[in-house]
Length: 380
Image (cartoon, rainbow, N blue to C red; front, side, top):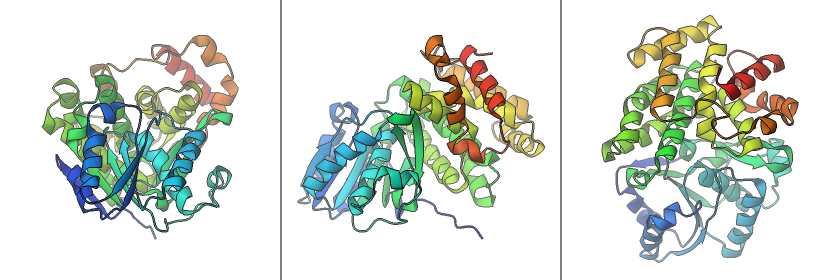
């Protein structure tokens, strides 16, 4: 028996759909967001106006970084408890929404802490707080998933915490919010979504439901991500915004794979963007996984979905998409100095074998991961 969950109560789509916040019946809204992008673009002001018009008080907690850590969550939790909201609205990239997920659950359950969370001792539902996610980037799918990725600085590792209680009640996919994304953010978050869809499709937990979602997301992202990057049209931004969410629905029910395991380890150590690291890792991981005949067959099917033939051509297409999106070819080009890369290398390898790597369709040894990382660094 398998339980399939497709997000929270509803997914709202369409340009201008943040107006749905006016139907939230909120009285006190705690708004979690990132650095300054949403403030500078006027999105936060617009959301506050919508909420103020229904008599809702608001408080904004900003400054969530691209790799939010435990202290960021705890600092926000202090502000939340002082404000006593009845709804939390997370606006911005996946990092903001992930941090908000943990804040929301810890707020409802004051006895929780990160030690219990890391041990998997999390409740399966929130108690009272309503949670609304409004993503402004197109990649993580976190607005519909039960995962929250938080950096634990003391171990240099990004840890994926999981519980259905993290799934927002409402996901608002307003493509208007994506129009101001910088080119590198379009590229990196887009490749995050591609990696989600691909790893979900070849995961051994994949089934008829998730395969349709993942394969459709792969086809849609390969078709529309280049247009979104180059032409920046409202249509293409909307398409990518929806397909990344579909990829999120898929992987939330299957799990991911070693590309994510590696990117979480690298991100925890070097503080680079998650999507960037996924993009660099994915071709290497697929070459490792293709030694399994079942995985190779699944990659053959993905190749057909994008008009190619054979798993080798699919991997080639991933590399070509990276080049089109101006993704660095290797970790050195991404800005990691060789001395940094070599320092604590054994621990880095060990961290790469944790998390999503444990559900990779083809097991990997420390030696295999070590060689893969060295190839990723030099781009060989």
